[in-house]
Image 1 (tube, rainbow, N blue to C red):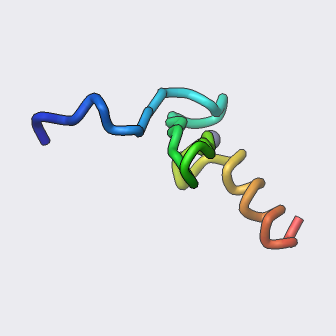
Image 2 (image 1 turned 90 degrees about the horizontal axis):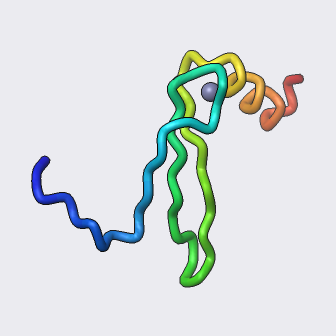
Length: 58
Ligand SMILES: [Zn+2]
């Protein structure tokens, strides 16, 4: 995809996890409310731990 808009309120930064090639994304959840999301690889052990905890498994 060419011509990616620089003014888009969307920032992607590599890193955020020591166990996978995660990327961090800043996004505006609500006007003026920014959240930093870490997107892990599906195979990431840290990510799996987070999901397990969220589901009440661990
Ligand atoms: Zn990870």
